[in-house]
Length: 215
Image (tube, rainbow, N blue to C red; front, side):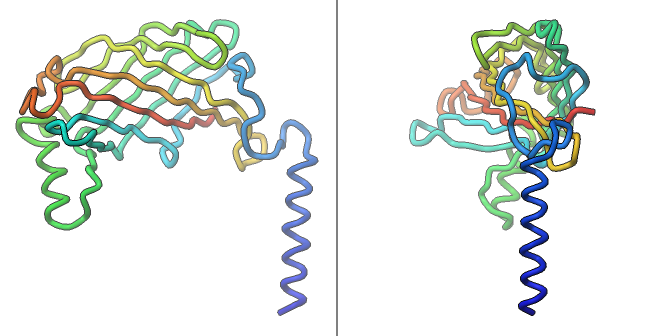
């Protein structure tokens, strides 16, 4: 056992040294630059295991109630020579709304209620999408992404305030990974979801955390 443990320690140590001393193409995992200009040109697809879309809404004045959508997909194309021409598309399944109220009958019933009649009506409108129309680079790591947001069968323009979190390598040798944070606020009544307004607030704050892999 001790010999096996010793060999394992040596093996892990060798891997660590290799990662730390590898050339750029085999860089250690993690962010290597926070400059948008260092993001390589190409097409990027969402890492679904590291993505979240979280909503927050004032509930009867008592709390800022939170929920999330568990089925999200996205991709974008980017050229550091023309960042304003980046194209982004995001797709969300409204039926995947999760209130974190538990997997018992009550929790599942509440999720189903919000996905159902009077609310998101996912059976009639099974997809919510965001398609960019303009990208406006800002100072440093910030920028704005303008686009058309479709929810509950209604399409309206919204603006995402975006922060570029960096670019670097994933665990796979030679891979390129990047990540962003974004925020926006919508009025749900403008999308035909007005149940209980204003007792349950009209404004919904959306917080987005996403990682992408270069294809």
